[in-house]
Image (cartoon, rainbow, N blue to C red; front, side, top):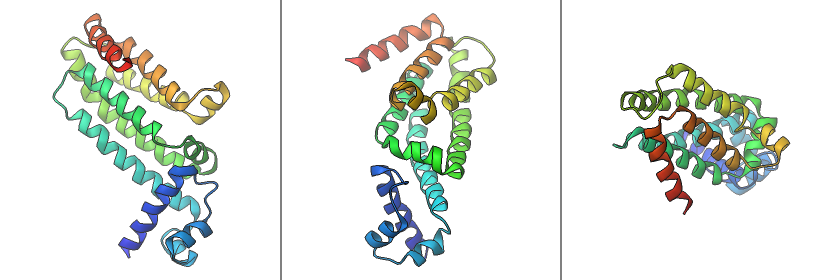
Length: 203
């Protein structure tokens, strides 16, 4: 039973990532999975429930990638830079249609995404900021305020509505937002390392 459910999630994830969930019908999924719609609805009473579970699966997989970066033994500036690179890679691998679709047509799934990123941004940044302030890479301002700034920016700027209204990609929004915020919390010592990393990445 669980294998059947996982099979549906795994296949649906692939389909949704390729072209968004709005255009993918339950009939399509059933036909390509070689199972009845009744079987799919047994595990997922609605398409929105399926989308929500797919979103959770994607978020969990991506969180593991970021956790690997957080666990690295390197200075906090490099750690933060690598997290930005990992998130950029994740976003570049996701068709923007699915992000827009979830935002507009599946409020429950979008709520899951927002709650998940809130929790993860808090946990990932708390340790990095504490280390950076202790070692002189980040300015000594209240960590809670710094984290809230990152969260507010993620909600307001790395957001389909903002991107559509301003005619640039999520990746561009992410890159500029993270760089502005990162430079804003760094000391001169931190900025020197960040500049080297940024120049190396741009080559």
